[in-house]
Image (cartoon, rainbow, N blue to C red):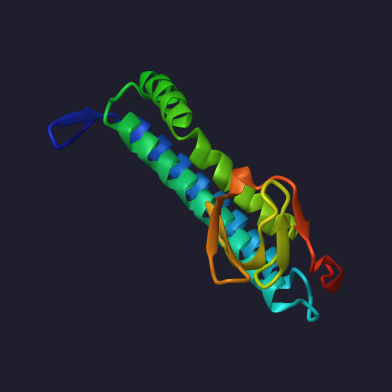
Length: 178
């Protein structure tokens, strides 16, 4: 038994946890390397600037998700070593996640729609589009994970939540190759 910060921790539990963390860290490094290699070779030499930006955005997003998952696992293992009942904590976090998910469902919809717009190359910055809902015509000036900005012919800017973009006509589509 080890006495760390006044807590009695068994040596066996500490070694098992360290080995588990080492295993998780190795898996994290392997997955991160696979992502890096995959996205560095994606598209080839003939990839346009917009496609390179889309690949970079997706790569950074997946890398960030992977990093947060690793940190959560490390935190849970450390809490387990310190004697916290992690299963009760996970159940409570599940309930909290459901509450937060309901509160932020529009933001989550925007985020998922933004990923779909970028990944599926539905339209790009510089494309001329017409919004079928109100007939607004303009040029896409910014595509984010939450909103898309379209600048009209008179300079007016329409900011659209990504999950609300429905029935859009891309007048520039014949100029793009996926």
